[in-house]
Image 1 (cartoon, rainbow, N blue to C red):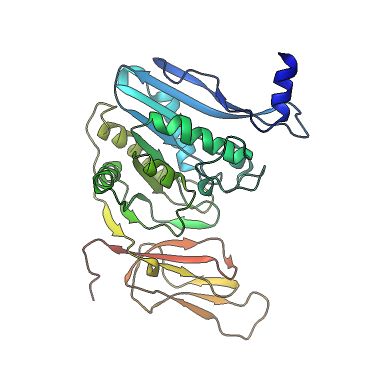
Image 2 (cartoon, rainbow, N blue to C red):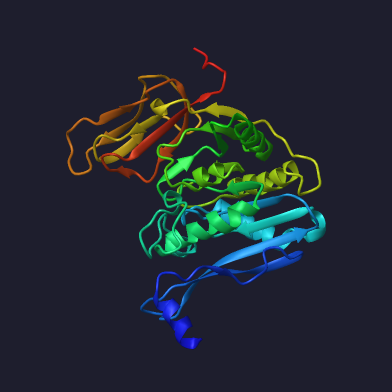
Amino acid sequence: MFLQHAACIGGESMSITPTIPLNAQGVHHGFLKLPYSRDDSAWGSVMIPITVIANGDGPTALLTGANHGDEYEGPVALQDLAVTLQPEDITGRVIILPMMNLPAFAAGTRCSPIDGANMNRSFPGRADGTVTQKICHYIASELVPLADIVLDFHSGGRTLDFLPFAAAHILDDKVQEAACMEAMQAFNAPYSVRMLEIDAVGMFDTEVESQGKTFVTTELGGAGTATARSVGIARKGIRNLLIHAGILMGELQQDPSVQLDMPDDSCFVFAQQAGLIDYLVDLGDAVREGQPIARIWPADRTGQQPIACHALRDGILTARHVPGLVKNGDFVALVAIRAGIEIAE
């Protein structure tokens, strides 16, 4: 038995095991344990925190944060939920993964320092793959099938800043799309976006949606930090979503939400040279097609004119790059449009 166990530790087939029951009633705090042999711990493990709160029969919500390790609203709000939500408050089950990409979260990086992988481009993962692939495989094959509704928190991390929004995607299945859009509206962020992804291959979003689940995501700020306001939006959104799902009793807290749409690739602006970026508009400002959004100054000399980055459509500046230096090909701006509303002349 011992020799067989040791052989498994040295191989690529060892799976993740939860240290707590996923189906028991009450509150359970523990870990998803992934064996990971490395220089500083030959028989070590990656221990991903998980909380499961259950009471009676009802829907299941899967709530995740730190898919990217430098995004903090989700981890803060979900850590709070894990210690405040009581079984008697709910009917159903809430599965909480505040730091689903624990290696990246511990390092404060977007991608995992173990294998360099971007978790949100690694789904559905592989049971015999790298550490990131194994985590993705477990979440996709064991946790997502348990869920009726999934909320995955994001913000801009260290290189982007967003207007605070909840988002859902346009889907081929219009019944599923309507359920996702309704859940997005229930979350009730200051902005609500029908979201277009630059590249949806390997995303957690795509995996969850492919399993037919109701899915909501967010972008709640960024610049490598969280604020009292952005965390407050996350806390309110969790409560609203659980009420909407029929898991938590109470009334939705609904405030005005600006409806935005991302109809095509013209929403995105990218740098075509490296340098010092000089934004000419701020987040939330209205812009016109052809209007300069930013200028890129040379970062290594004086006496040269900057190169302008122009909006490709009318809309609202919804996201921008941080920090102040850009490389050729870096994202510069997202210009979303008010859904069904024209910008006044």
